[in-house]
Image 1 (cartoon, rainbow, N blue to C red):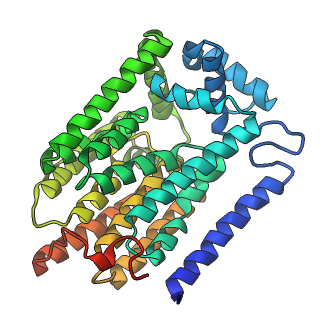
Image 2 (cartoon, rainbow, N blue to C red):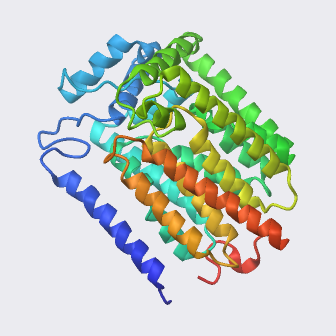
Image 3 (cartoon, helix red, strand yellow):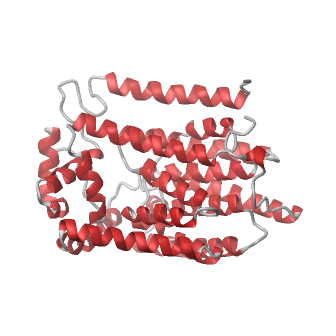
Length: 398
């Protein structure tokens, strides 16, 4: 089997990310735990301690900032360390509790590898060729997510499977979309797409999945965690609104704040963007002359732009958008604008920590621009590519 130049470059980058991760594992500061075996101060601590509370029969404690912060500092041995609140619905406590059954090191290792595997499986299902799969696995967002132990790979996998299953298996797709309710702010535009596209079975399946999750969670944990959730979300939103460090908030809101706009003006800007995105997604998904893969790509890219509460680990979803764009272009190939545009977008994601402005949102805008450009080019040429040929199915002929 021959390997082309893009595949070789992708393999080199994958090896680089793996080596960088291994370097973190073997360093004195450590990756999951340090050389003394103590948990390293990081995002996953919030998940693990919430799971421990749940196993102890106190799921409500995950929403108690004082107790949750104390538990995290006891775990990492750093009373002055960062605090990672629990801004998730109680349904996510099932996952946290399952992970907390393991010692901390094995728990985070299991979580990161399992979610990365799920993301890889989604990309493999979407990608038309092995080359495209390798290129998508070389993008930096998933590796950044892997290092910090966040949930971006999981949400990207749910969105990826939800979209790729949608045309042929709408009920299964709806279940994946419904499970995304563990991070509901990522699903703002999905109902718009499903209704505009006429995917009513998927919409119903997603809604029933959300209701079933809520009922099971209430039976398991009681109503109190649900009652505590609104106040928790309000407090987290207030943190994002009042923080002076906005470089990590990869949204139009974060960009506006970093450029000096007030929080209220930044929220108005974000709201206007959501309205534009909703109109664009409704129009795209209602069109018969726009290929499904482009619709899916546009929705995934729009998801990364819609929420004001967006961090770099959420940009794993942007890789799903890129994968669908490449899938659409499997027959005709990408042109120079798309090739260099995708490179620029991923470089911007990688450089997010080096500048005082959130470059991730620029990356999302670049990818969305490339998708809309392809829609315009295809409509001008009278092509929709609603169905991929046999040669463009995953790994066929690659």
